[in-house]
Amino acid sequence: MKEQMETSLKLLQFVADSQLTLTQVNGQRKLGPPPGWTGPPPGPKCEIFVGSIPRNYYEPEIVLIFSSVGNIYELRLMMEFSGTNRGYCFIMYATEEEAARAVKELDQYEVYPGKRIGVVASTNNCRLYINQLPRTIDTASIVKKIYEVTDDIDKVSVYRNLTGLVSYALVSYKTHRGAAMGRRRLAPESATLFNNCEVNVEWANLNMTPSNVEYSDYRSPLATRYASKEMRHNFSDQHKFSTWRKLWIYLAKAEMVCTSRTNYHN
Image (cartoon, rainbow, N blue to C red; front, side, top):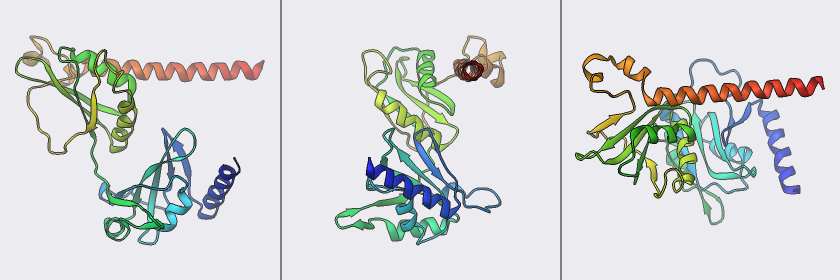
């Protein structure tokens, strides 16, 4: 307890001294952007991945190391519910040159005797690959389950072999961060997502261009002939399940507001 309090006080003092903004959302703690930043955020090639971080290292220690090679725009430290870090983070620099310098100079950097960190360029991958699915399951069931567990989804595509059995699914997210959080949620539930099987959840190969896809849009004998792409999307399982999820979230928020007001007046 004493160590946790000292760590928290150190972090608060660091944030106050640096005048940076610290927020925690969906299992990650974000530091930055720097005060006075103008213009758009840096591109995806400005981001690096840092692994094997000591569990007692937090933003003050990490910034001290990585600010030595360039100007940090944002630091995203992955956190456990207990308050300890998960051993890895993402750091975005102001320029691509600074990110490349961090990979070159800080990969295998020894933070203390016998403990080295790994630093690589962050891959802007927005797709997850899910295989070992039930072979005869329908597309709607797969889409519904994925939307129940994850957010920020752009599209779910189910791929089948020539006999119509499910081979695998590709889940496309709107951002790399959304995909990373999706993998973090799906992987621990791989044995319970579908009955009597344990699926495998991995990052999709960036060069995958498979065929025999059954997209998560509306399919009927007349769809491909008469329905536009927009119309098929409006009647798709993906659109239906994402709308249900949004309505559920709005309802939950409204109930929380009503409960808070009731408790306040009482």
